[in-house]
Image 1 (tube, helix red, strand yellow):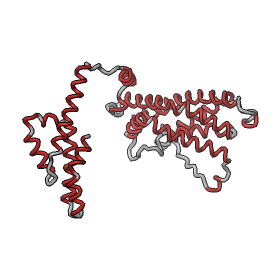
Image 2: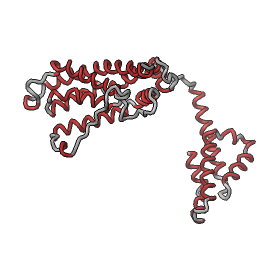
Image 3: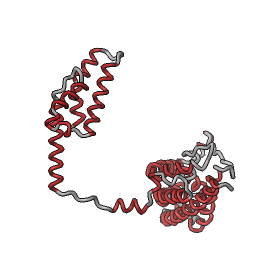
Image 4: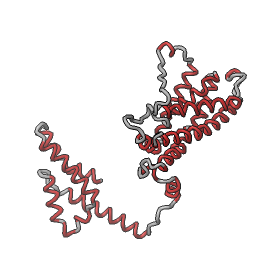
Amino acid sequence: MDNGKKILNTVRDAMAVGLSELVSEALSDANMKIVNEPAGRRSRNLNLMNERSAVLERFAVNMRAHFDELTGVVEKEVNVLGYGSLSLVEEEDLEAIIAMEGMISHARNCDISEYLSFTTRFDTLFYGMRIDESNNPMDPEQIGEAFKEAVRPLGMTATELLITYRKFNSGVFHNLEKALTEANNILVDNKVLPDLDMAARSRTEQQNKRSSRPQKINPTDRAFATAGAAAGGQQLLSVMQKLEPQNLSKSVGKLLEQESSADTLRAIDSESSDIVNLVTFLYEEIWNDKTVPIPVKELSRQNSNNNIENSLN
């Protein structure tokens, strides 16, 4: 067994165990909610606590299969849903299906940092294959599919299914970042892109960063710094008002040289300079473009000063 496959199996086994623990808690919460539902909206004989072991076993098997599909240990099963089978989906079941899709989309957006770090690292374990949403075992859609298949044999009512999906969302998807962090740590421990900036930082460092207070600034220094910045900005704008629209770049340079003795150059910081250069470049490109009509060029040249002032404001 090569090293890449060993690493994959380590991640696979850890995720199957960790996610199964979250699923177990979600099933407990769902069962408490279901037993309080009116009799007409739930199955008489359904007790998720009695079915929990079987559900967890199926879920773990499904999760491991998603990992094994990448190495060819098992073949990926393509589940094709035809138009004929769509008519067999009850309206209430459709609500649960749509709800799960929304949960999957939300989970992707919430855990994007850890998810991207894991995907980037995990992708390096394979040659000739790209890891993306369609085959990433830790993608919310893959995890959600593993759970849906695990509870399918229970034959739950639409109400029970929706409740169970919602508890799965709050118990598993809302804690997916922890699982992704664990998966990233396993890859880092195995020297898989250990210097990747976002995921290489430890959770302790992130917590310390959140808990640390910003350094206090002397009120006097802060007041004078604000006043100085405001004065510099006003001085810069007064200079910009004197610009000649005929040649913007030369006009800027000429005025800055003339006013250098009055500390004008020191008043213009790098950010302001970048703004001036950018706007100057844009208007010169417009003027040099032969496809732009002359009236448009004249109008843009006349408005160039005002636009620079607005940008600096």
